[in-house]
Length: 88
Image (cartoon, rainbow, N blue to C red):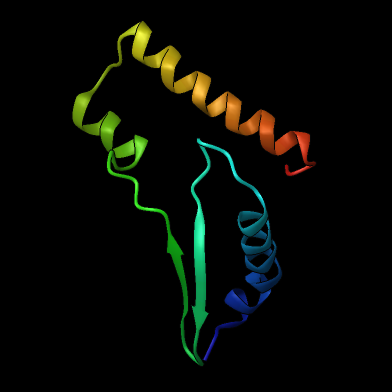
């Protein structure tokens, strides 16, 4: 049974799923499929071999300016793409 706080998130989750199904960009994680049962919602996402940026930063520590620019360009590219479709 979903708690009231989780039920209130349902429209946001549905919107996120709809958006991920529609968009395609090299720096936005792809959603392959969605399954649900009475208790759980399963999202089948693209495998990203490099892992999460946060984990990389924790492990590596400070980035070189060149690395930081590379990651920043990718993030800005994805944000610009999303904003061009009024995805805020």
